[in-house]
Length: 459
Ligand code: ARG
Image (cartoon, rainbow, N blue to C red):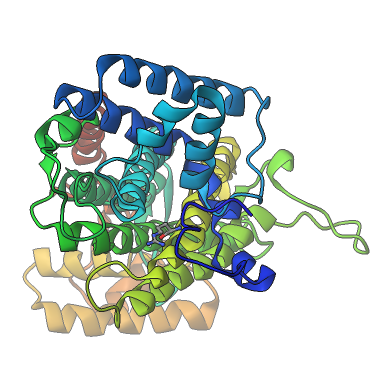
């Protein structure tokens, strides 16, 4: 049991208490960030004359050695230390002796852990952003290739109007693009350096907080030391953004599961991204999409846990906040894993274009266009709606689609119909006439895709 605080105690910590209190099993994940923070702190202490340059160089060398040894598996982070901060400090003292004992001058584990967590979250925001971007690139490719791939658009999961695959996938492009902008906002707002806040009230040493902030690529130091050590808003914001990413992935997964089913057969998930059944030899299951949908609950859980943990904490640091780590790390790893697998799945998936188009044709998705035809010939929309309703009823009765009715049958219900009704309700017309910004018409879709391309090149 290696602790940093034995002085005022007369008894050993109970073993169960030690284990309950310790965080090394999970905070070892940010050993790299902890060392990065210490390096900046030591450089600042020397710049301010609080440490000598020689002490600084010895400490920096020692820290670099620890980092290299942990990375190369020459030095194991073990449970004999309470937390990652104790591990690094104890190892430093082992290596370089007395100068190592000066590392923690003008610092508390409270501002240290606040810094480590921020550095970790910031690094991970960048990594997640790249995963979302990889997904956007995969979606962009599908869009480019499917401007003319017709499929039914749904509302209430009932066929509504024809769209294209590019248009449908384009909706997800927008969602994930917003997700990236949310990550960007969080990163910007959280980018202030808590180091120098001490335990809660700053320190009496003449620290240069601007300098440490600059060394660690923060925009500026935090402005209130009590807030610095107890702010976990950015963790909550991140978990909220991650929950939204998962919600988007889960909606898309749900659609892919439906599309991959025997009833739809719109897509075929690649063998490499499917699994089989131990009993039913014919099965090829969309487990990856199901797992992504399932893991969404776990990330929402992290957000709820963190909000609940923080709601009753008096200022400033309290140990409750140690709970931020496991759930944040788990949520980050879950989201990164889901994004990578999902991108692999969608970019290897085959689209069954003929089935999509056939499905768009047989569900009266052109009924609105038949009504619009009447409107274009002077019939008020409400009357046109009623007329086409009667035509649909007739088709259902005969088991045919609108374009299979004869002109005589059209005219029986309204004399306004002429031969050109067939062209007016063809799938091609239905899609291509929808040319306003945001609609599936190929011309406007091409413009949107070009805009997306520019965005992906610049961001
Ligand atoms: N393991 C602690 C945490 O994660 C580090 C800070 C400890 N500070 C303290 N005063 N005990 O929050």
